[in-house]
Image 1 (tube, one colour):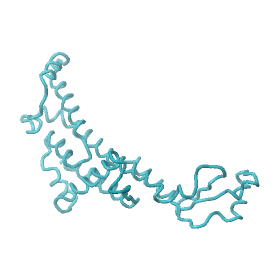
Image 2 (cartoon, rainbow, N blue to C red):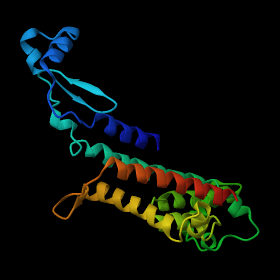
Image 3 (cartoon, rainbow, N blue to C red):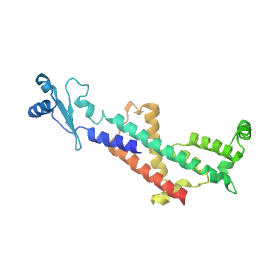
Image 4 (tube, rainbow, N blue to C red):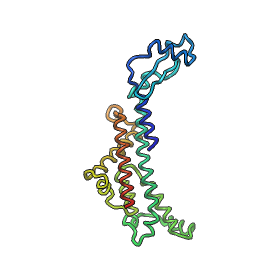
Length: 235
């Protein structure tokens, strides 16, 4: 999530709001300070936001157009991917940490009891483990990591396997939002991540628009949802 936050903040800081190029007196002042040869000082330019003032040096590949909102959108797209990856990692790690207690319970969760394993898996466990439960635990953890995703249906399946049922109903209750809200919000994140990862964010005849405000929303809601899942799991 910190990677995502860095990408969002960097995009905001670099988005140019300056309409005009650098003034002549500024070019001279910065040129002198940076030891730019006098003959090249007229080529100096800058971009500016509420948080940053960036000087564009002569003969560089960075132009003012590179700091427009559309040009910086790849950073936001990677921010969306990072948020989804963080959710997926949390889901996998948290569920895998619950496999041991689920296996030791008096009654296995229904989805765990019905998990398919091969005869080869069984023979491998018998050959490699004195304590067979450790071997079965490794198989379940591998399966859960393959199933883990930011997609809410998959999140529900993973946690149901280790005994957490009606996850989204309980998450909505924790967040005090309408039924289906958390599922819908996480679904929007997963769908946008898939569009970016699998279709280069193309929608219709062009690439989909994306603003820092939208990515902020993905970040905030995902964080809230993960915190709510944690409360459900701990409870």
